[in-house]
Image (cartoon, rainbow, N blue to C red):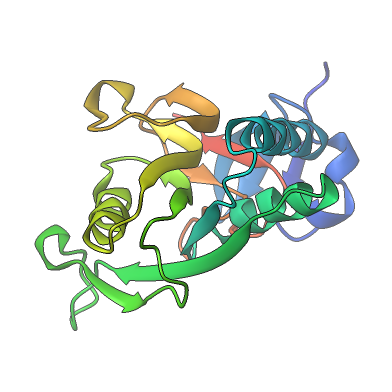
Length: 203
């Protein structure tokens, strides 16, 4: 397939061109598309179908992690509704940044708690990317502390597979290298979060 280079400024008007290996310029850096919009939506629908089978009659809580996980979370919920599946949804948000706006792994804290009670419930935690697993781990600890009956993870992208501390039941892309990702909740600086595909920075 012939590659096309599309800048962030006009990429939203040309999503039909963006198939795997297309080159996109985001924040002055080149990214290669890993999965285009149509294939991405098909994969999310596949995950939703699996959830309906795995959680039939269990009324799970689909728990999204803001901000990065919200696009994936909303699509999962949308397809579950289209499948007429019985579930509830909620969100939570953490921060890993200090007053000096520097990442602080040891100082992660919750900014927004779910409104639903997790006690005795089946919980599926949805986020954009697994890198070090710190945010996901905090979400798991919160769910365990609030007596969830079971907890499973649903990640759009999984990096550093060898570093996983717990099983990831549902994912779209896994075994990815450490290079930066953009699109579908993931951003570079302040841009790229809402791109309707997933792309990885070219080395």
